[in-house]
Image (cartoon, rainbow, N blue to C red; front, side):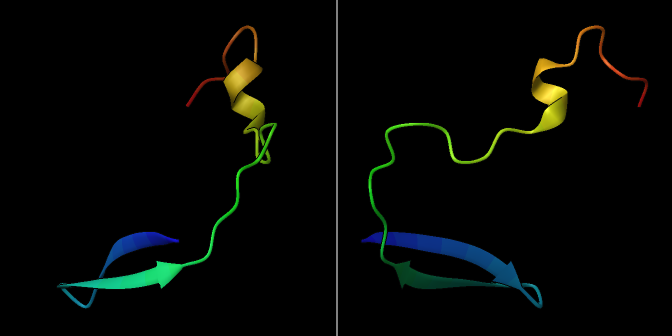
Length: 40
């Protein structure tokens, strides 16, 4: 389990979420390996 804090309507809230261990990356942003980097 992991405790997650987030802000909603200028108030911090906390919730619990079930989690599991991942052996490899489950999300890779396309810009993370862009060569040369794109203009922002």
